[in-house]
Amino acid sequence: MELTTLIFPIIQIQKHKKAVHETTKALADFDAKRLTFNDDSTINSGSMATRSTGSKGKMFSMESLDECLHGNYDGLQVYASCMELNGENIIFLVKVLKFKQLWLRTFSSSNDFIRARTTMFRAALSIFVSLVHSETANYPINIESPIYTKLESIFGQATALVATRRSGSADMTPISQVTPWDEPTEPSKGAGPDSFAMRAMMHSPKTRNSTDNESREHIIPLSDASNPLDPLAGYLVPMEFDAHVFDAAYKSIKYMVWSETWQRYMNWKRNSGSVD
Image 1 (tube, rainbow, N blue to C red):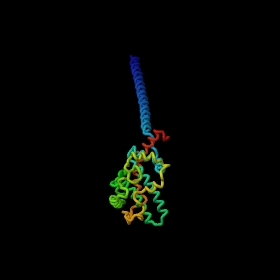
Image 2 (cartoon, rainbow, N blue to C red):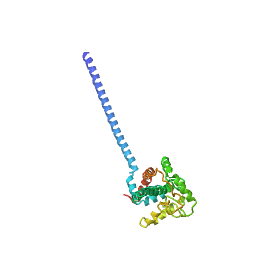
Image 3 (spheres, rainbow, N blue to C red):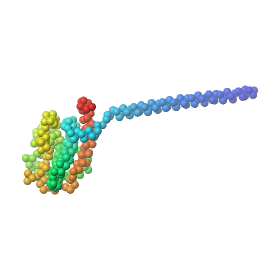
């Protein structure tokens, strides 16, 4: 009787230990499987993230756009004008760069500060009238309202004088004919993307007359000495005008071109085998 009493608890204890061991093993197996699942999920999600990033492809650098704008930008201008219909952006960027260069040349070669400043104001006004002002540019660039308002406060009055005089003068190139596809020239019947594309193919950088291009750079004469009827004769340049007048607009348009047009243009060149 006493032996039976002792053996029964021992058996129960062994069963309990076995159950505890099996339970512990089951929990360990479950934890191992869970860890394996989590690791696989992490790896898979990481692969998905990598694929997602890779599918976007690399962004071409801002420096590559700068190099293009300072060099041969003809291809980019043709692409922007004909494929994206925003060629005015490229022309604006290039003209602002040339404006900066002209500023340095003008002030370094002239001892007459007022005359040099007047010359540069006229050069800047040509850019504003043909590419920025909403009422005189056929295809004005798209800039933020505060930037436009600031430029309007500097160039608005002079623009009104020039536009008024030009509207009544048949021998001057109408502002309305300035387009983002070409430098201002004599009135043309075929202005538009198609005619620009044709000109771009016909006139490569090697065959263009650089002197002729320079003479057509500004739709507003840089000097009023030869024309007594010049609407800007005697006009006082606003105090706010300086070499940095277009900096904010340039930065805005350049970022837009870099993040959109430049990436698509370079990818198009890559797909066509023109870029490594």
